Length: 172
Length: 97
Image 1 (cartoon, rainbow over the protein chains, first blue to last red):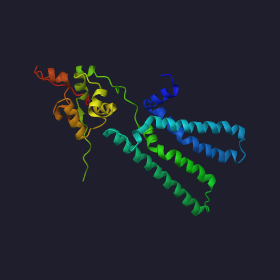
Image 2 (tube, each protein chain N blue to C red):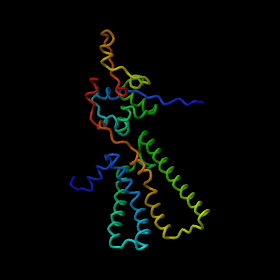
Image 3 (cartoon, rainbow over the protein chains, first blue to last red):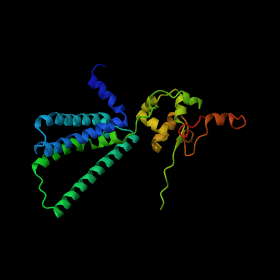
Image 4 (cartoon, each protein chain N blue to C red):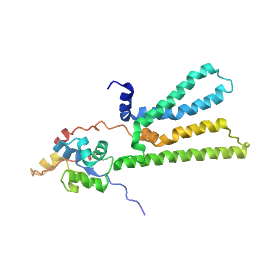
């Protein structure tokens, strides 16, 4: 096994919860930060393009690596059509419920904030400069939400979770 | 109506597996489940369905109550030496410690 990408891919399901949470944060913060940073720093002229470029590349790379790693961890265990055993199905269903429950809460919160702004501040105009990145975020993140929930919430693999016989247990 | 809290299910799977020299992988393949699920059941972190519990008992060719119990199993040493020398052929509980 000499291919380093293949080795990393094979090691992903055994990653610790701490590492997995870093992946999830990288995946879900990278692209939004890229857009917020561009809108608030670059388009307003506060930060020159040459300084922003490497930051943008790093944020985009973090997103891609995070998404790849999250998928590499969960693989088909988050899929509704995968051949899973009863415990895995239970874990998958909980991940789906938690992931899309959280998404629903975020959508409700955003609508509430927009409604409050429209009521107390004034008309809210949402142009393509906002809708474009939101659409990309939806396309990027919606499919991996259950996988990300699995990566975020599953405990570390138990130290005795190997496939070998438990010889010492016979003497207990 | 007050809901009944979930009862922890104790089991002897680790001991039975060791007796038979079965790895989790082999046992999981026989049962058609993930080997990690065996670990979760052994540690009492997952209660199997009745269907899976019967399948596990069937794999060891034992009645269900010999593999699973709602009360902790006595350790094997207590069963062998703790009753005035009456040796009982049984295995200790793993999930209850």
